Every structure is written in C-alpha cells, then in structure tokens.
Length: 129
Figure 1 (cartoon, rainbow, N blue to C red):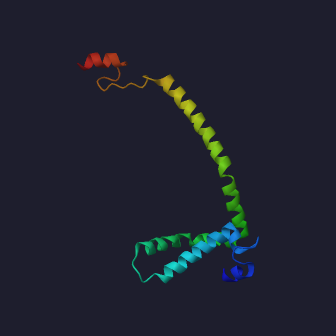
Figure 2 (tube, helix red, strand yellow):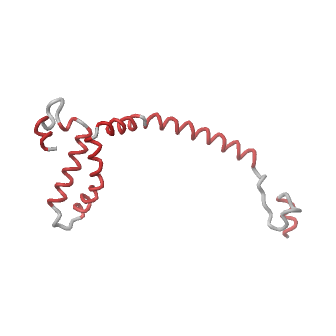
Figure 3 (cartoon, rainbow, N blue to C red):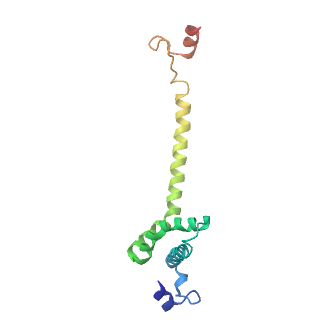
C-alpha cells in the first residue's frame, strides 16, 4: 500500500490513491490496524472498537483482485433494480393477502366441543353454555 501511495500520490491528482473507493477502504482498514497496534497496551473503549474493525481485513482482498472487484461493483450497481423488483413482489403479495382474507373470513372456525357435529360459531356457542 505504501509504495502505491507514494507512486500515485495521496489525493490531489486525478489518478491518486485516495480517489479510488477501493483504495479508500484499504486505507481505512490499514490505518485502523495501525491505530489498534499503537494503542494496544491501553484498555480504552475506543481501542476495543478499533479491534472490532479487524473483521474488515478480508475486504482488502477485494481491492487487490480486479475480477472480484468487478463482481462486487456489479452487485452494488444492481441493488436499486433489485429493490424495485422486491417492491413489486411485496405489492403482489399484499393483493393476494387481501383477497385471501376476504375469501376465507370466518371459514376456518374451529370448535373444540364436537368437531364432527358442530360447524358454525352459533352452534358452538349454543352447545357450550
């Protein structure tokens, strides 16, 4: 990372290191690890949070693998379209749920007194009392 940072520059030029989103992620993960190592002897809550950022270390592999980077970028670009499809599916489920409630309301009544002779709620109430 440091050689690439020196070769491309930090942030000023168009092709500099921190202009790329994947390099920003890589820089954040490395700096979090450096801060964690620097303050590892102290027992502070902020240092414990920095230790939790170790979970992000496998994401550095994405920044170094162009094919995987392309796949992740394609997935992130398609999130909006996927959300549109999920909204349409939710509306269809809502329509069928409303139809189902209207068609089956009161049809699934169950009486525990005598399930073979009593079929309606009024018969069950008359036999229970």
